[in-house]
Image (cartoon, rainbow, N blue to C red; front, side, top):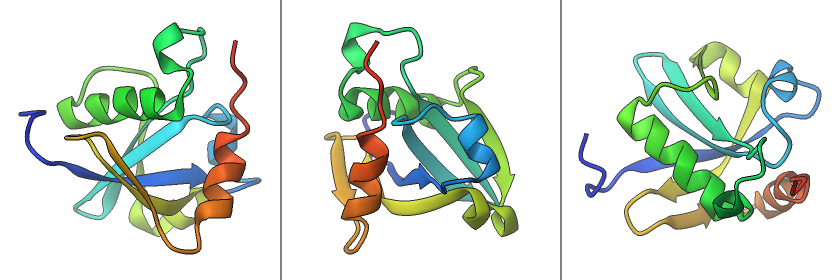
Length: 121
């Protein structure tokens, strides 16, 4: 896949108390693409303290590049569309080309609450 092309991935946060909370580290950059009734969800929480991933943008770049190249990682899962809303809230978009982050109207608090949970190691 050409990462120089424009890819608009959905930006999300974990629904509090959902099963995804046990899998996805707090404050992770989470992106997804919907295809054929399923969402492919990739996330990056910087579990090992890499210096290039302390910003949310750094974590989103890693998660989005893995999503767009279908890179092998354990920080990914596929979830059925009918189960998706129980685990994730879509709060905006992340465009890989240009690294553009857009938060949807009315989602700023969910986004800032989620991002603030990141524990820099």
